[in-house]
Image (cartoon, rainbow, N blue to C red; front, side, top):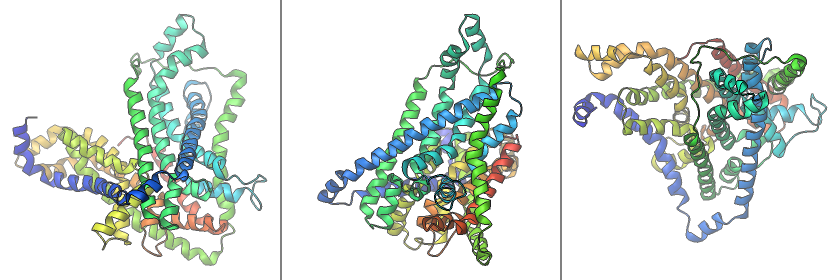
Length: 517
């Protein structure tokens, strides 16, 4: 598209361009202000902050947890993906669904289950897991599905002729896997590592409840307890550097990969591996993560919820309504923000529209605690009337989960033929009028899917809600966190169970439906 044509179309695109620019600014400006806030320190204070021995401890703790979770999730997800795609086991589809459902369990709920089910008075006769090993176990069990889903799709997309060629040359099964199959899995593995890594770096609830100090936990302590907001800002910047480094590494490795084409071009299915006498062990391997990551948490939650004082039931409904009052408008707003960005990126691709699209994903890649802290500093300076209000919480949740709405909307928009809009334009419609009359009715399913994803994410979100919710405004997530910190496990159970069941139902519906938005 020529520059002259773009300039000619600019007035008609203003209804999309203006909200897209405002959205991009809403994501980027608070982060820039966070950097400015950190640089406000005088040279002596800055030197003291940068040379604190505590920083090295936080780096060691954060990296140890990150690499530990990546290793553990690989050991879980890789064999599970292989068993559910390339073997002769029965019930592989059912197992695939069950192995994905731990996505419904937030990290802080998993930590709550560990603390309540083990140790003195727990439902399991096991010593209480805290610190590094507790955080490693919980985060691995709730994040392995991200890796599992990607690897499973990669296994299903492999061209079986590559393996057949290796076997024809006399290469054994084990060598074929590591020399032919595994290299083709690397893109899915790296993409999964990125998602898992971002989750670990941004996690706050798990590490705080299990008393393992990473950057996220330290940021919260410095801001809410020590009231050292300059140091908190620098810790947030350090965390952003970790996130940026992870994104850079993933992109670098992907660009360097040179792989054969995948896909079932021949229409042939890969030969199923016969497990024979190893079948019982395979089923045991499939059942173990389901028991640890799904059955045990739900059992513990139901057991503890049965001891919940009935007179406090009104508190449950209040927390549920507060969660809905924040999550519902945030999900609608996230989709509303996503529509103009997706429209410009798909219909008018250019460096500028692609940059706006990347900004849309930036809010999700930034760790939630750092994002919340950036908005606190920004609102106190520029929007003081919004600080400590429900509209600010809704706005920040929408910015953070914008990516959840952007993906489905963008995908649905690609499926709507452009010629339909062009036909409406020839009849005198403006781009905005043609979009809402012709295009939007055809992509509303993608918008609903994106809104639903944003809603569930907002209901589960803890650090943003914890820092930005109005005084006395308690949600399901903050109730779980607050009660668990006080070791009031029975009181926390109904709130945790509500989150888990709501999320599980949603994940189950998405998996049951094969439709892609």
